[in-house]
Every structure is written in structure tokens, then in C-alpha cells.
Amino acid sequence: MGGLAAVVLAAGAGTRMGAPKALLRLGGRSFVRRAIALAEAAGAAPIVAVAGAVPLPPAELGSARAVVNTDWPKGQMSSLQVGLAAIAGAAPDGVLVLTVDRPHVAPATVVALAEAHRGDPSAIWQPALAGRRGHPILYPGDLIAALRELASDEGPRAWLRSPAIAGRRHELAVDDPAIVENIDTPGDLRRLTGDPAIRPAAR
Image (cartoon, rainbow, N blue to C red; front, side, top):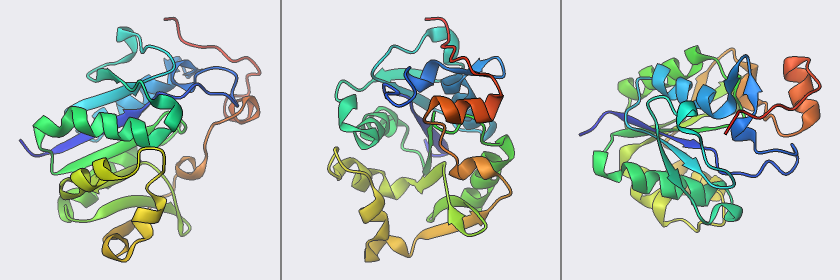
């Protein structure tokens, strides 16, 4: 029991992209595999990848286990709650939450987040670039129950700003522009890769 777990949010349909982002490829790996690799680099276990609009092929999972959010159209919060329920038995002292929207985050960023968590496991750790907060985000284990109780069709932003929680948010300065760069559209993907094609991973 204890240690760092991870939840990878990979359930969306990628409406603006024109294809589910989880199965798009960058540098020979799918977006979901890249997110899982970040969790692995941080030393997280267990790792849960939350599927929804499309199944996640076993070949893309690495050391992660896939779970399905049947309510994925409600948004990422519902997927996060499915993932948190799946890791509950491990009773982690922290959970790293990653999305497939930022497949180019540097491994050094998640390693630094994990190190910061070890230094202060009671804090919510979030990377920041020039004072601008980004993702992934690392929650302490004692807040998992509260996250699971939030409305599943809303995000955690208001909760994170609440007086009871805001004081626990800590910024970790990083030199990683990817933490604030969502890859949501074909144009975003072209800027990232220089390749005009959208190529999903084989299912």
C-alpha cells in the first residue's frame, strides 16, 4: 500500500481533432502510450488508463491497466473518478493525473513532480511555466475521496480554488512549454509534428 499511483485520461472522442486523441501517434508511439510512459517514468504503480470513446489496444498499455468509463461524454471529471475508483484498493499516498492532450510533456517534468511529492506528500503539486500553471497534476492521497465526490459533469477548478483546498496547491517551476499546450486540433498536431496527416494507432 502507499506510493504513487497514476490515472491516464484517454476516454474522449477527439471531436475537434477529428479522431480520438488517445490513438494518434507522435514519434512512433500513440498519445496514450506516451502518457503511460510518463507515469512509468515517475515510478507510478498502479497505472490505470481510462478508455471511453474507443477501446485501448493492449499493445498500447505498457504497464497500465485499462478501465472503461461508460459516461465518458460527461467529460474528464467522470473519467477521473472512474480511474480513482480503480486505484482505490492500492491506497496510494498520491495520484498523478495525466491526459492524452499533452503527449509531448518531458519525462523530467513528471520525475520532478514525483520528487516534489516525496518532499511534501500533503500538497497538490502542479507544474508551472513562468507562473502559468499546467498539467499533469499530482494530488495527495487524502484528497482522492473528495475528488470522487465532486459532480462528475464538472471539472475540479472551482474545488481547487476553494478556501479549504487552495492553500494546498503548490507550483513547481519547470522549463517545459508542453505543460500548457493542449494538442486539440489538426493544426495543433501539425505544429507539433510538422506532419499534416492524422494517423491513429492500429486497434
